[in-house]
Length: 342
Image (tube, rainbow, N blue to C red; front, side, top):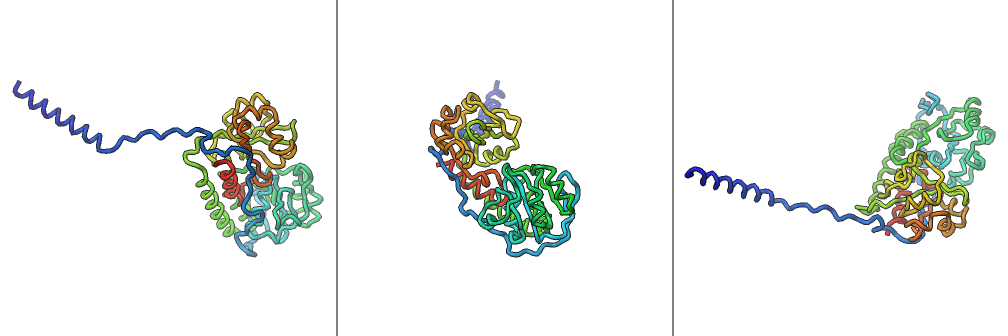
C-alpha cells in the first residue's frame, strides 16, 4: 500500500493542474440572439440615391481599338468604332456603365430606364414594356450596340446585327456576385479596360461602405421583394431575381427563398403572403403607384396580416435603381440599409 498513496497524490496533482489550465482562458458565452425586428425602422420609407446623376470615372478616355470580345450566345464580335454607342437593357445598367466609364458623350440613344439627367435628353429606342425598336436604333446609325440576353424581341436584335452593326450581348444576371464581371466586360468591349478596373474598384469600395451600415448581428429579418403592377399582378421575387442577392447583403433572409420558390418571380396568393410573414417589404415606387402608393400596398391581399404590414415596414425605391446594380450598387445598398434599419 506504500506505493499507492504516492501514486494517488501524483494523480491528484495532475488533475488539479489540468483543471487549472482549463480555467486560464475565460469560457466564452454564446452570443445573445437578436430578434429579427430588433433593428428595423417602423413605418413606410423611401430609399433615395444621394445623387441622381452619374459620376464618370474618367473624362474623355481614349479607347484602344479594335477589340474582339465574346458576345453571350453568339461567339466573338469585333468592335472597331465606339463613336456612336447605344446600350439597352431593362434596368438601364448597361447605359449607366457606359456613362460611368466616361463615354457618355459617345452615346446616341437610350432605353427607358437610362433616365438620369445626363442621358434623359437622348432619343429612346425602346417601346413600352422595354422592347427594343430596331428601326429606332438603325435610324441613329450606331457604330456598336450593347444589349443583354434578356433584351427582346430577339428578331429586333437580329435585324440590327444583320445590318452589319456590331452587337455585343452580355449576361442578363444582375447581382453583386456578377457585378464586377459585367462592368469589366462592358469596358473591354468599348476598349477602355483601365477605366473598367477603376470603376470596379470604386464600386467595390462603395459596396463595402454600404455593408457597414447593416447592424451586426442583423437578426436576419425576413424581407420580401414584391413586384406590383396593379391589384391583379403581384409577384414575389425569389432565386435569380437579383432581389435575393440584394436582401442577403442587407442582412436579411429572402422570403422567396424561405418559401422554396423555384422561379425569379412567382405569383403569390394572400394565404402564401401571410404564411411567408415578412418583416419588411421592398417594392418599386412605380409599382406602388399603380395601387395608390404605399397605403395601397398595405391594402393588397394578405399584406396587412404580415408583420411588415402590421408595422407598415414598406420600403420603396425607383424601379430604375433598386435592381440595376452596376456602378450604383453600393449607393443602392446604402440607401436601402438606411431606410430599413433604425
